[in-house]
Image 1 (tube, rainbow, N blue to C red):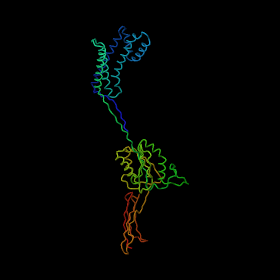
Image 2: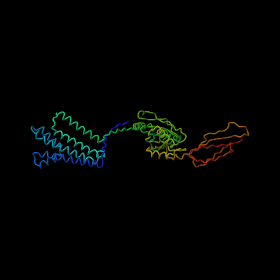
Image 3: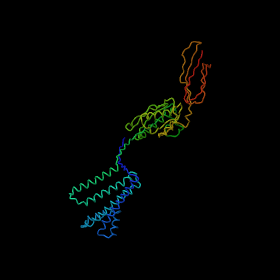
Image 4: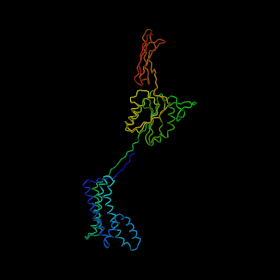
Length: 408
């Protein structure tokens, strides 16, 4: 979603000494206008009365002008008497506003306004002097022409002032980027273990309760929290993905596709590589220039294979990049990271061999979680030991090739 906005900014090219010069010019102009106001009010009045009326016209000009205007409109014959007072109040208000614009507005405002205030004050004073000059003009011109020429002069002054202020229109385009929230579900073989309560929100198993598998508890939790995930899809795109050693099946819930079905959750993975799965799942979005906002990891924590990317290193890197990883543990309180398995993956030998001929036997042993251990592999025919090999395990996940030869 794109949000367009436009702002009008002014960049008057005055600073330092030029600002002081303008302030001095405005100050002299305001003093001239205040003296003219005092001189105009003094006609037919004492000096003290003229001073008091001038002082009242400056700060309270708008209020007095409104009261005088209402009195003149409601009282018959009072319009002629109140018109000079109304004129004085409006004159004083303009003087006060111009002074505030030049000297008070810069205080506590941005640099652009502080530079533009004196220029605007000079423009106002120039317009006032233009009006006064045309009022005293005695040239034999018609009223319409005189009004037109006055408006033209004011327009020229305004355009000149606006040009000095250097107005610019800045267009701002804000693009709303929806991030991705990755919900990664562990589907390795360890998730088949039956150690979860039938009600996944229960903390422990009851004595008479039949446990369910970890993956079944995850299925029920995702089913019950479907509405919460759909609500999350209003704020960000959601991808529910499975993983064991690598990212597997996934389903995407977006703003316009909130009814997508979750991927099938079956604990069929052979090993668990949390670091590799999370790093590659996030890299897929990064390659498409999509932002990953957060990762929710649902796993039993049994990381039992060789990771190209260590889970803790991945978590630190994602955290430094502003991508938090939230974890939801599944399973009993047993330390599942200590799981160890040793399995014969395949066994290869001829089905038949002639007597007194060599019988080769080859096998591959899968070792998980046995780093630092020594594994002794023995080949027997009946009760006869025909060969032994000892291997030192140096990785979390290792495939050990062994070969034996027997002459029956």
